[in-house]
Length: 274
Image (cartoon, rainbow, N blue to C red; front, side, top):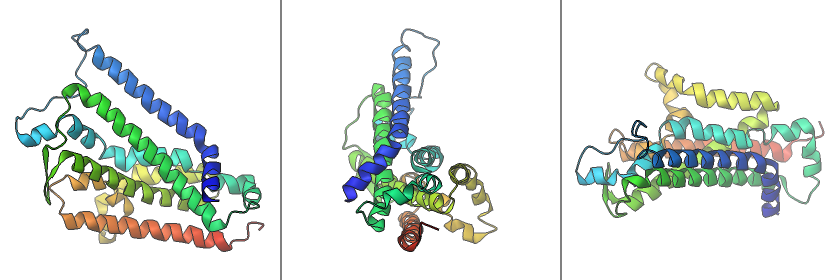
């Protein structure tokens, strides 16, 4: 039943997901074409600057290192959550507005399973986009040379091989995706207007970051979820201790779990005929 419910969710958003994935792939093809023309057109600027150091750490920041660096910061905190909003931002609100939720619940699928299907589908589709983004970064940076997977990368906790470093970052991205999916479903459930729900989520991701500037004067803001979305960046920055990373993971996990539980509990006992 869970698989069937997930397939049903995929059918609702497949056009959006395919469109976004196609745009990402098209952009990569255009950039690859530009790279190929760099030798033909001398005045075409370089798309990325080569490393200017010769240390082992700099070698690790070659093709794969630049790929990892490109998958943090603005992309994780702003762009990728917005892509998730586009995919599933009206997951609940559209069904309540169109009253299709009644027909859906006539199927032999329990409400908790239906909720779980929405959450898992959004996560899996987002992980798919993330994999495309990582693969695209690999293609764009491959012209700089493919470095040894075992090259050491210095972290706050010590030195780890490059493959483990990238795998760890990818897993941290998935944690961010899991929380973001809970937040999107939470907002879509309680804001029943499609336009208002998606606009509110976009505002939260685009402009909510500015609230962090008040963090020193308003200490509770340090627990704002937007302050903890850049887990991959924290993992590779010397400005953060391992305890900071685990603290951020804990805040995201607790907040995401509470949002998921709130939607699941209310939806389970809600009279949709009202």
